[in-house]
Length: 193
Image (cartoon, rainbow, N blue to C red; front, side, top):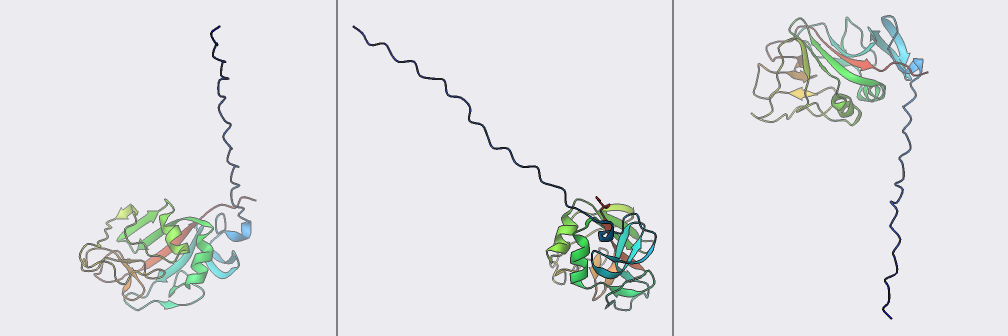
């Protein structure tokens, strides 16, 4: 007699483990400027944060070519920037950055890369900013970005005076042709509870 092959069971697809949905981070009302009237608040444990239109002001230069002095509090009429530890805390509750250079330029980065750079102590070299008004460019091909090392020295268009220099040493400006008035804001997330 001839042996008949034993039928093999059809393999069943193996169930793939499903990823647990990641819970959205909880953002308390005290962690954000979003929805607050303009003024000074304690935000995410950082005292004296100036909130304006739901944004946290982290750098202001209203005194032209004078250097920005680091202080714990920055207001709309100061020449200062917040210390790195404060910016890193506030950035965790933010989704974007807005840079304002007087009436010369307003730009934003809302893809998360500028926020990640702030949290991780990196510069904004090579990041894309959307131009809301005015003109904006960055240049790193001439001599690199030697002074852009992380907050508050974020963009250095070395050798290209027509492009952005967002530095505490020479001023936060869209060009190297003199600082007028500049502001750096964090666009904060709304509270989730």
